[in-house]
Image 1 (cartoon, rainbow, N blue to C red):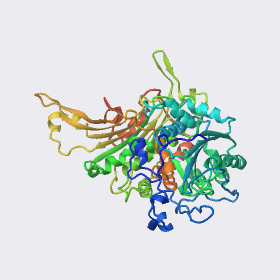
Image 2 (image 1 turned 90 degrees about the vertical axis):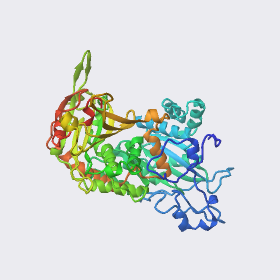
Image 3 (image 1 turned 60 degrees about the horizontal axis):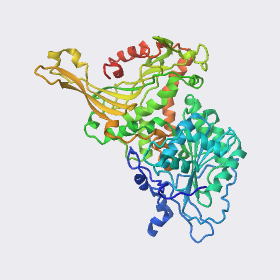
Image 4 (image 1 turned 120 degrees about the vertical axis):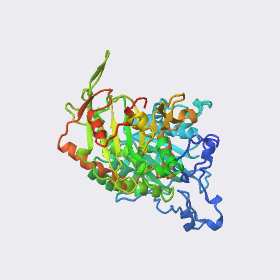
Length: 592
């Protein structure tokens, strides 16, 4: 394996971030995330109890004077959970290597390395972190899949999706070459203890005598999660450092299947080893949501039923399934988008001020929000499915025209829902969700519509139509990230003419540096052991409890989704749902 200077790989820190939002990290920023070793801790502070209280996620005590280092993991950070079929793990002797007994290494294994997610998102995100010097000095990346490939084949596959977008002035080819030399491949089955044991031997060759920390990213279908976790934890877990597993959604099909999956995973892993990833929580504007609210005095006093009329969470795509209908048809838009992405954003928006910035304190507040929400039923929801539409000489296909979709499928490609949080802050405020494919535009945003001004002086002179233009705060998550506040304003001139204007923070104009991809932030957090952007098991249970009743009702009654043309605003029923609460969808207004 090639060696690299400190200019290429900065020492890596394990201290969790101290704020709810992390800006784009430069190499100098990453320098401040250094790992704290015993050499930097005063001798008076090196007792086991004090080390366990350290902020470092991977602080250890080394028993001096012994022939080999005795590693004591930090409390609540177990190397792995032993199962009945656990195999004994030992670190092999490595000749002619002079390694400090406090040195550590991180081995990242992408399980399902030949899939689209790995190629398009995971490997490019790891490369971006490498370019910024945010990966540890000692690291290796392994791809694991059933496909027969060599190390060279994997590197060739990865290289096609890598770009030096972080700093284009640097030598891109050199960076890629350095990164690819750290990438290796092992072919094996996901349910084979023997194949994972072979992977373990390869990992140990790269780790040497260092403390070995291992991260497994499960980029595989959910039906083989448990097999992969069983084999990796039994045959390829770290023997002297931490082992963590990132699990991609979907986390089950409903409350029962989700609980069964969690129970199965916990046979082999502790809860703090499981990192359930929802990539929307890594998006810049979602991370900034808590900062916007809790660090700006003008917003926090208004963040309640007294001033907010309704909140809208909107997700729309301007394309259909495009050949991915086979996967989508098994889940539908409610499971794919609303139960996870939009509901996670809602909890961050609506939660009370956490006791601290600690991950558990933040996640505790999110769970409280979910537990205050009543389960959804069919009357609270509108579902739809897009149909074929012709525009000029172009014909856009219907959902069921996708060859991977079963004929006559009733799977919804659109859904709108009205949810309520029954607590003192939000009682009576509708939280409207809307998600759909093949709509008129692509956007993800949060729209906060404030109440009308009581006794508005200008209603009498300018009519009730002006009164409909209430103040609205819009947080656009994607594309063209922005935050803007719609206010009523006088148009310059001699006459009294009023207008609705925007106070606009456009991220591209204010922050010219490119916004990091969500996977970069989440992978870095997983390596650091920072859990605040990952979903806890009780949080998952509470989320499914809200959506499971309506999902069962839709499927048992074989509810036919309302049709809407490809490229339209969605089914008419969505407008009726909003009108029931005297609300108009904010994304459908002029110039919005």
